[in-house]
Image (cartoon, rainbow, N blue to C red; front, side, top):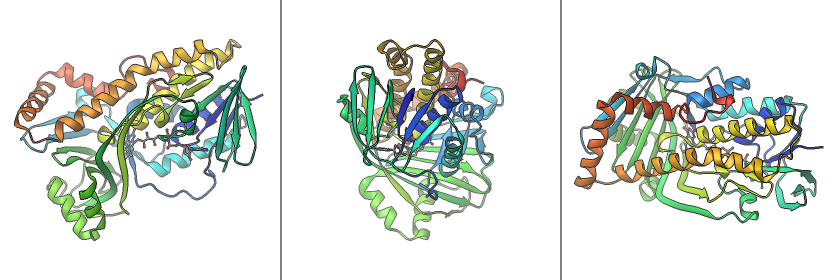
Length: 392
Ligand SMILES: Cc1cc2nc3c(=O)[nH]c(=O)nc-3n(C[C@H](O)[C@H](O)[C@H](O)COP(=O)(O)OP(=O)(O)OC[C@H]3O[C@@H](n4cnc5c(N)ncnc54)[C@H](O)[C@@H]3O)c2cc1C
């Protein structure tokens, strides 16, 4: 008997499947991509919070090759204002870590494949979702039908399950694309990350092993097309002109990737015998690298709730249990979505009056240590209700 069906074996779905399986639940995990197929890099270097580090470490998935971030320099591209977030602000702990997305995916897939409690359907595309009485039925393209009392949609930002359940969405697009790649530099990063809020959009560089950093440059679509068409050298010159000299001479060291940017927030995180996690439950602007961090907090919360219900022999798909999940996750998700959106809008303007408000904000964060500590702790995932897997 399958206890839970998870559609989507990406970073959140795979992690959730393994965490539940470790607690003795029988899990069906379905993904259209074969986890044994050679991994193709998507170019991303994830900035992960302390809570994400705790989750991956407890599950034995944490990659050795992670780079700690010990300081972050944030600056306003219009006014000479900046805030430095330092490890000393939080008792010397790293502010976060940078991990290559392909490494993370590899570690998660290995754990999923090793678990006897996970029945993997992959490559298998889900084409239908039904609910009848106390059961959910998920149908694959190969006409397999998987039944269980609870289905979890971890099928990403265009979630088909969310659509079939007819969950209304609040969504908006930014006229921005994120250009993602790696850059080497002549000066060491000393584990320092940078976030420059330029009028054209935020430009972030996060430290990777050696003299390399991962770039995420969110920029207007038309300008992005031009940047993507430039030669490697000309592209590096554009990044240098926008970023400055803090890391010395910059050189492109990987392929360039691009991602369209938008926000998508379902009005509810649950439906009859269905819960949404990860990008299916929220898609943000990657300005402060929070999407996966928030998705992993969904995972850790569901693990707490479902494990307890399972040990008490309760119906895992009951409304009482699902509502508990929605209650615990809603605030964090909406707070992050609004914060990220606020950042993007406040900094993507050259208006002097908005610039003055920004300047005030920078001054407050710099001069009020408890506010600065709260900002760091929140980004680290250590405020509010912290589920067991995410705790130190
Ligand atoms: C440019 C950029 C930079 C980012 N940087 C950061 C960062 O630094 N830190 C951070 O925390 N977050 C970051 N994010 C966000 C992060 O990438 C996402 O939050 C995370 O990848 C979401 O994982 P997921 O498993 O929920 O979804 P996905 O990775 O989209 O996985 C969904 C899975 O579902 C499967 N699937 C979909 N439909 C079906 C179907 N019908 N049948 C079967 N399988 C299906 C897919 O094959 C896939 O494996 C960034 C995002 C972008 C765009």
